[in-house]
Image 1: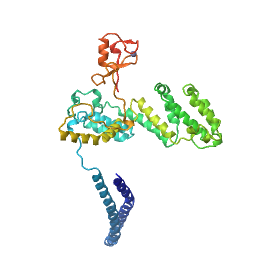
Image 2 (image 1 turned 180 degrees about the vertical axis):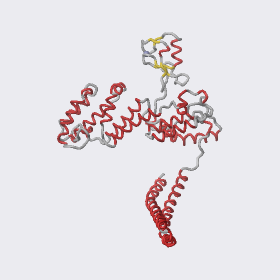
Image 3 (image 1 turned 90 degrees about the horizontal axis):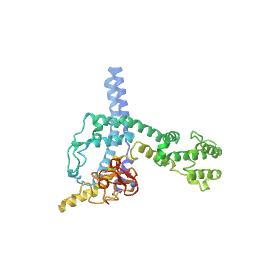
Image 4 (image 1 turned 180 degrees about the horizontal axis):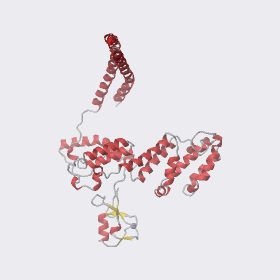
Length: 415
Ligand SMILES: [Zn+2]
């Protein structure tokens, strides 16, 4: 890997394309000038062209020279790449789960582009997907593509509401831009305040985190609009802000509010106080931005990270192990028979761990698509088979609490 890094550095060092572009521009200027002169006075054409020859050749030579260098480096880089990543066979098509649901893949790509803020690319993509609807191919081990659920074809039939999503994400990016680039908390605070109840019911601390950061900004000497101002008045301004805005937080965040108020006593040397972590936290802005993104996406019913990004990254991490396994299996002529389960463990980073497995506490078995987890009105969850056994179609008692319910009242749980 180090050899590759060295090559990239050399490539960057040799990047004199700026000079090459300048040379090309000079050549063009020369030619345009000459053309104008000839147009104005055709008699002078032979003379003008003769004069043009040497300078035109010089600039073109210089272009060639600089391109030669960078081409040479690019070649070396591509050789280093080939050396590092030797030709390895890609996984065979026998485990292809994607061809049977191209519309779902299109939807995932469109969603990814939208949530990355690539609105124009997303709309072109959706237009093209509509114009050329993909044809699903049945593949082994995946559900029949011709029995698709409605959302499968959303992109193709136009039901995919990209405009609404685009508006939502445009708002998200506007607020994030204000937070990150302008250190302006106001749009985020307004957004969170409008959804105060929803956020609270989710157990989110976003609104308080934003207001606390605003308090800190005022304390260290910014005015209400985030501009630097007389810092000696900061603590006073922060105190006024807290008195005005912290009332709704006083119960849920009593301890945190007390600490902020306690910090006021150290207004002269807050850096040496026990509260310094609130006032000298370089990552505070990034933390609220991340927290805001997470809450914004979850209110839209989406995860904070793009599922496509997660799937592709996890796939790239898993690929070497899977290829190795495939090789071993073909050597030993073994067969991989367990559906929907990997034969080897793939270590993924902690951020890629999802609790997508539910084991029924009664049947002590892992739930599957055919036997999904079901939640009863009391909030307890068992698998569908257990639910059917317990209820036999009529009113039954929850195995974990005195709650009674009808089987039709249970809701399917999606993990
Ligand atoms: Zn219960």
